[in-house]
Image (cartoon, rainbow, N blue to C red):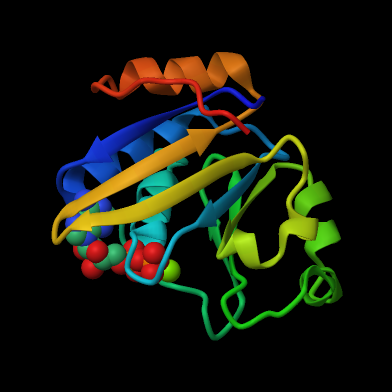
Length: 166
Ligand SMILES: Nc1ncnc2c1ncn2[C@@H]1O[C@H](COP(=O)(O)OP(=O)(O)O)[C@@H](O)[C@H]1O
Ligand SMILES: [Mg+2]
């Protein structure tokens, strides 16, 4: 069972704050696997993560749906991928996923990761986002990096802290 917690983000600013806190905890080699329906807030959360990594605010973080991968330079390099249009993990590996995940000083975040489960490493930080209401999203995070997960939970204290069964 991978330890995790869930939070309700009552507005976009809360989701940004969660992303900033997570971005501040990232280490080279981390893999973020995001899932959730269109409009669930995956790209929005990654904007916060980029900010938390120190990516300059004037650098636009937008969905890589059409280019498949975008890169942003902060304290670490952030590779932002979108598997929406892919049908298999093999396509991601063809695009060079292996090089991105092993690049020194880089982290990888993949939207629609549930479409390419074979591309998600065991130690990934798995983030599931769900539309609750117009401005409200539920975020579930499962991450084997227990200490950082706990730090993230503490930096974003809300009710509903729990351990998710896997
Ligand atoms: N609490 C919230 N957290 C994140 N996004 C929210 C929230 N409330 C409203 N939104 C809006 O929902 C949309 C999410 O879009 P986006 O991040 O592109 O979703 P996805 O990448 O999952 O398709 C944005 O327009 C954002 O402003
Ligand atoms: Mg998106």
